Image (cartoon, rainbow, N blue to C red; front, top):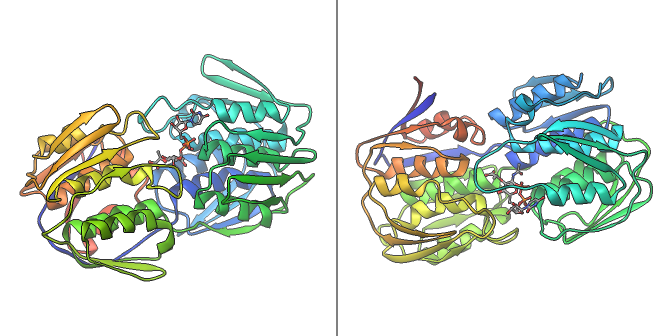
Length: 416
Ligand code: EPZ
């Protein structure tokens, strides 16, 4: 088991360079099997990527990763069962459903894994595949999807699901005729995937809006794409700057993608200098409380809600933090309370009273973003905090120890 040992209260200054977006990269890698030889640049150095590379190799794709550039040769793909030990390592293994269904019209894969932040059904994905003409059998957590051919159609999503939008887009690239996804998710990552697929020869329009049109093609080729900057990693470190930064520069970002966050930070009185591709942020002793409600894009992102809750513990007064996407995104709260925070949880909402002094102790990372929230809390706490189960954090934050050490944090990783 890996743990982090963090000694708080050191002012952080300098620059943190943001890597490629996890939630885009984890779809781009499976998407690559729709073509031949592709190059994906700006791939983040996180364990979710290692898990996807293992699945690509299992499918007989050749992968070469040098620094942050990944070449995937899917020319000799061999369709095979993706076993539980692979599918369960991360959520995004489900993108092999859409990609393999598109290319091979046949998929055998076990249930995906991922953070325990809610029930996480995939019924919207499955309904989409069925609408395209696939049959789906589920037997003891094993999914078998097959179709003689996929036929484009109108698909209405009952919720703007990121994963379902991308998965249906992947399958529909090889359908006969036109597919229109209505009530599609609008996240920036979806545009990144559509750009890659279009570079491979797909014909997709409307990505980034709630209506995406895909004209099916008979064959796609290889292409090159750069993973867009990770707005969640950026958001996490911007909040860190608001907690304990001294002109901390968060670089290589698209500032527009974190606007929902920066709007709230301005409301709280956080000193920010916003440029197109970087944000400079400092802490303030006088933060206003504020109410946060997570929403689908372009609303306040659910993935930054937990880190944001740490900032709310430092505001002068009572803030309300409401999560609307996942049923179980309060897993970090018991740890924050152990560190001294005053938080009352009621279902998917929390009332946070600040400001409270936090102190170091032993806490548990229960999920990726909850774990990141604890890192932030530890960096402002008096004394030393030990965070256990940090494998969750390493799934989504590349080189986190190095990035934080470089700006003055006292943070170590060890294994027990
Ligand atoms: C993606 O998950 C991200 N994961 C999540 O990031 C992120 O929180 C989420 O989008 C929302 O932005 C990846 O990209 C790998 P959804 P996804 O389908 O696609 C319900 C992180 O911390 N739903 O948009 O799985 C679902 O239960 C992670 O980086 C169904 O009911 O999310 C949830 O309540 C965690 N049936 C809501 O929709 C379905 O078939 C949103 O889910 C699909 C989803």
